[in-house]
Length: 530
Image 1: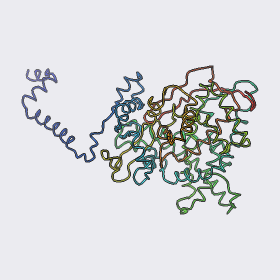
Image 2: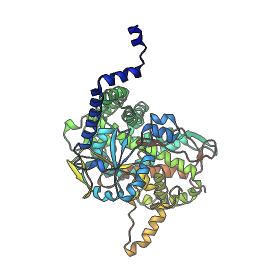
Image 3: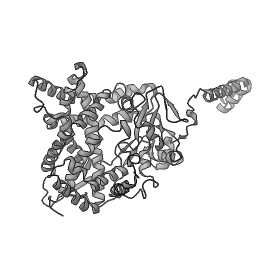
């Protein structure tokens, strides 16, 4: 009977009896919890980081607010950054938010700190270290280093005069071969596929040279690699596996390593062939990043064919894939806001005629309305990252002012998309005004005589800000301007299937992607059509 009685005791009754028989157990449990709380509260906080306000966005909350269950796996960040912006940034205060994609706290800074970071080098705040730690983790397909920044900031920018004719030639070739004269009919293309193919053909020529850019096997392997660098670096982070994460990343990157090896094979063969041909005069040397990398004045062991290949393939993410995403957004805006196109075409035609017909610096510098259209497009849909100015503190500490100091290893960013949509900065921010920035510059030009100057660079941060802004921005803008300008001149552009609302970009903490499912239609206009 005693056995039967014991077997019928409920779990709750059992716990109650244990608590009665051993009252010290409750005291020990309570004491342990209290000790943990006291330890956490008393943990040294020399930089007063606990006073920095936190904007919370747990996955369950995001599911509830978005009304979508899949947001549990791929949460948003922009609604919560916006919340922090209006609570804190507008009042000149930083806040912090947990980035699930980057698996780290990021300190979102108010615009008043832009002046402080403007001229700071990598020994104190470093964009390079941020990319190296976040997008090229341990066991991945290589490490981001200063070589790639040097190629973009010095070699590409330093050779823009030679690059621009290449961009125009390759753009003409691609448009003739792949879109061509549609003879009055509408021709359909997927927006993402068209933009990526065009960037492979045009921008790929600048990075890898004519031989490789025209080699379909190479460009396909390069495309598969570059398209998956960011997803393979970020998506595994949404699963918080603790110490097992790096091994999971390694498994995810196995396919990426194979793609990298395939593409590297072709680049190393190209380099070997150029070395076999021997020294060439400056006039005979190919105009591309491979040649500039080979000619760099650095030790030979730092520029082996494999090293050059890996670094240029990393760089191709920024020079090929990222401009393709930006071009997609620009084309969606062209298809959405057709009323402004005649005015843009008239300006482009006039500027090209005055400069002899080519997309040279003289012509592009005068296309102020076209510039404004592109800036407004970037303001609405910035492309890959809606937050800019990413840096990691690399010095022991970095002081922003007398009240705010961050220690080594902390990550900062600026809420550029919130600034771009702040009605106090840009009136009626939801409206797409193609001439918004043209009007600002015209007003600024008229006011220049009174020494009142409006620096819009602190309000338009799509390429970052200061010394460590995007090093490829000068190249990218000229690339996009040439390609999109030629498309506007040659074609009418609309959404396949008729008019539709401008497709929204997708917020995937921390990236911001254009809708890749949209099809576009093109119809030849002819250069002289009105």
